[in-house]
Length: 114
Image (cartoon, rainbow, N blue to C red; front, side):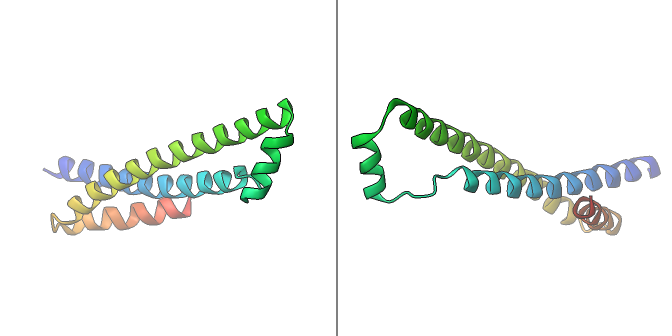
C-alpha cells in the first residue's frame, strides 16, 4: 500500500541519518581518545615515572588510562552500531526498490548535512 511504502522509505531515511550520525560520533570519540593519550609513551619515560613517581603522578597516570579505556569502549560500541545499521541499509538497497534507494540517498545527504 501507499502508506506502507511511505513508512518504509521514512524508516530507511532515518536509518541512513543514524548511520551518518554514528559515523560522526565515532570520529569525535576518536579525537578525544587521541587527546587522552599521554604525550610521551617511551619506555624510558615510563620507567622514570615508575622509579621516582609520587602518588599524585600515579593517580594521574591511572586516570588517563581509565579515560582512554572508556573512550576505546565507546568507540567499539559505536563501531558495532555503525556496522549493524550499515548492513541493514545495504539490505534495504538490495531490495532493488527505487523509492527505498532514494530514501537511503536522501537520508545520507541529510545526515551528513546535519
